[in-house]
Amino acid sequence: YIATTVGFRAEEDSFVFSTKSGKPLSYRNSLRDLKAVAKRLNAEWVGWHSFRRTFATAYLKNGGVLTDLQEILGHADTR
Image 1 (cartoon, helix red, strand yellow):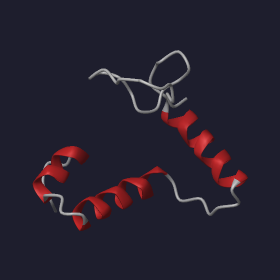
Image 2 (cartoon, one colour; image 1 turned 90 degrees about the vertical axis):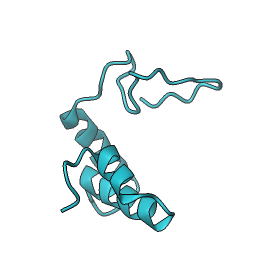
Image 3 (cartoon, rainbow, N blue to C red; image 1 turned 45 degrees about the vertical axis):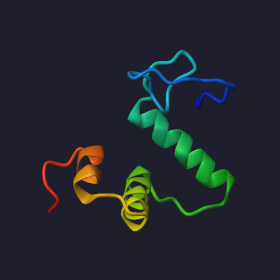
Image 4 (tube, rainbow, N blue to C red; image 1 turned 120 degrees about the vertical axis):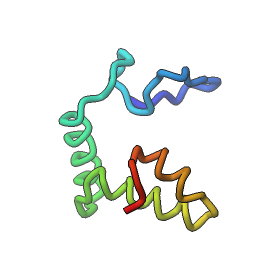
């Protein structure tokens, strides 16, 4: 469930993806939902990690700083 209410303001501890009750979406349920969307769009299955790599690439191509990206992604080093 993605909040789409006009005027929605995220709390610091709120989630991007959550259940309708606001609890964190489990990995298993998120995979089920993502697979359903891919099937409905007749799209190739790519998995959540592909979104992470796409974000990282776009972030750097648009002038993002590698050390900032490292922190965003939660990596200890850039190797």
